[in-house]
Image 1 (spheres, rainbow, N blue to C red):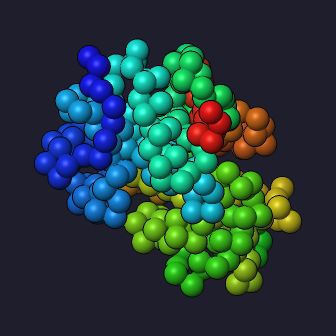
Image 2: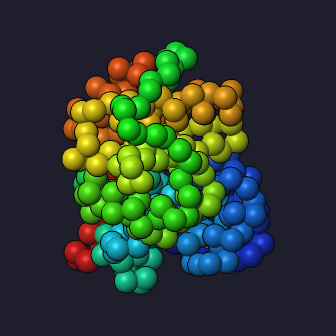
Length: 275
């Protein structure tokens, strides 16, 4: 059904949308969803007749990219909603619109709306109980604390390019809401992992090791600790995504017993400043 152009959802419409959003595991709770809405009501978009919707947010604080967190419509309507969201992005002074992470098989719907593939991703799942891997001598793995924030920001910038790196606000939120563990060598943070659980769906969202301290087993130890923690915390199968071109990380995950799924995912991007 053609729901018409998107617009900012009213309070009542946003509440009615929650069951759909909940199933997509975009937010931990209705309270988190409500905080998100109040901080920027325009980020919840709905069609004129209420049958189609989208949730968007800034991808990174330092980039002018508007990311689509969720898109709720029939497959044949994807292009129309992307066009509508491109207008939203332009009105909010973003330069680029980023798609959700979608199966490569359906990317053509987004490409027809003027998007191009930005990054190809691989999905991995834990295939067996992870073995315990000890960190190298002189390195300990411990929970991250607020005092680590500056070191985490610096480390993240050293490990990831502009598109992927986290800002201080994002890392602060993860420190408060999720589980960050760090590899500490003589009081210096040389690596970290981010482990999250959303309604019994465990995910490793980050694994970073300082370039100067790689190939010492720090990454293996961090990964092992995160996998074991998630295994103790919930019954779901641990999953993660990594860039298809990142062969080093894929080898590390395979060594830890994780298996790659046949499904390939992609991010697509559209320059809303063009035409």
